[in-house]
Length: 150
Image (cartoon, rainbow, N blue to C red; front, side):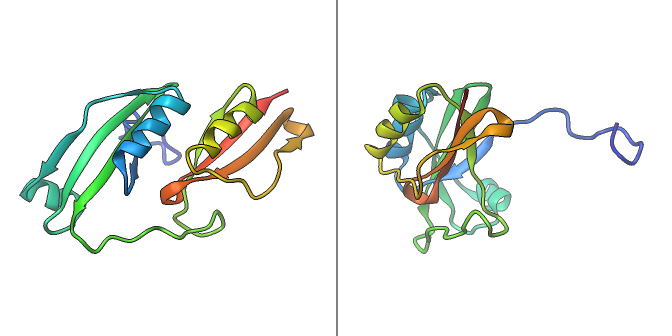
């Protein structure tokens, strides 16, 4: 039940969508570093797509990364030509990140560095939560929150 004592209209969570400038690079990250199963790439265009996303002449390549109980839709827009990189910071409205519980945080950070990810500080131990946590910043403004349980 919702807080308004009406039945919830949402039935299930579908997926998270991420736009990327390089679909193959992002597929490699999800498959080779994060351990997801990645589908084949499909291209989409046409009036229905344009109306769904609200962008004239939209043409995209899409693959899905499935794993760890979630599906991530990976999108590379081929058109329109005037695309830009998001510059939202974690404190800015509209910013998003993906959070993962991991084992061997140092080893994962090493692997991520090979895929263009950086960190601004060393991992921080959160005593009250019993974990060590860090944000890793990657290509296309992708932010990963990584935590390792003590």
